[in-house]
Each structure stands twice: as C-alpha cells, then as structure tokens.
Amino acid sequence: MQENYQYNQIFNAEAINVKGFAKGEYENCVFNNCHFENCSFSNSLFIDCEFNDCNLSMVPLQQTVFRGVQFNHCKMLAMRFDTCQKNGLSVAFNGCMLQQSSFYQAQLPKTRFHQSTLQGVDFTEANLAGAIFSDCNLLQAIFYQTHLEKADFTTAVDYSINPESNRIAKAKFAATGLAGLLHKYSIVIT
Image (cartoon, rainbow, N blue to C red; front, side):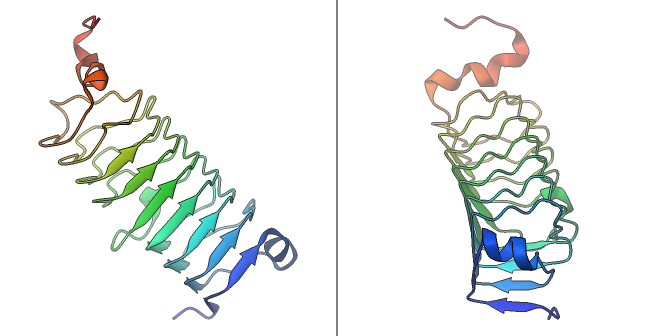
C-alpha cells in the first residue's frame, strides 16, 4: 500500500491547487474540475475513481494503475496510457477530448469510448476486442495490428482501418462508414 492512501474522498480544483497532487493510492475518489498541470500520476493507483471536467493533458503515467476509472468531459491531450501498469488497466471515457494520445499495446477489451474526440490516437497493437466507440471522432487515429474483433464502430466517424492489418472479425460498422475500411484502396465511393 502507498504511504498516501485516500478513500472515498472528493477533490476539487481548489484542493488540488492549494495542497498539490500527492502520489499515492486513491480508491473510490472523485476529482471535479481539477487541473493537473505540472503533476505526475506516475506510480500512483486509482481504483474505482471518477474524473469530471478535469484537465489531465500531458500528465506522466509511468506505472500508473487505473482500475475501474471513469473519465467524464476531461481534456486529455498527449496522454501515454501505454506507460501505465499493463495488468488490470480498466478505463472508460465519456465526452472526453483525448487527442494525440497513445494506447500502444494496451489491453483494453470491452472499453467504452462515448462521445469522445480521439483524433490522432495511437491504438497500434492494442487489444480493443468488444470495445464500443459510440459517437466518437477517430480522425487520423492509428489502427495497426489492433485486435478489434466484436468492436462497435456503428456511430463512430472519420476512422480509417485497414482490414488486412487488423483483426476485425464480427466488428460492427455502419454502411455509411464503409469508406473508412476501404480507404487504403483509393477508390471513390458515392
């Protein structure tokens, strides 16, 4: 257990600005309107926590543990989830701006991305089997050797996924999104 253990606490912007963020273990905690500039989450544990309207952009995540963590309406630019603790990574995103971030080789089966902007996100070699991308913008997101079996893209937009370079068996796509699967062939779909 970490030296700094917080259970069932609510943190707001004022508390974080006055006391700063202390590395440690946070269980069943809620963070509201917090700005984590110049903070590091490295070697911290977050279990069953919720981040609401927070700015976590560029926060270092080396060996961070996220289990059962919900991000709601957060700004999360250049986040390196690929440096988190690999075992037990469990997150969900709702209404987040998660641009230019990396999930390289992350194990995220059944992860839910809802109404989020995922532009330029790197999902190379990630396991996203059964993941749901509802109402998400995936412009310039990178899918290469990604496990996408049974993933749901029916309401996602602007994705480009090469079926030959990814595992997509039984993944769901809307007919209007088929161009995102055929992009590599440079054909015109009308």
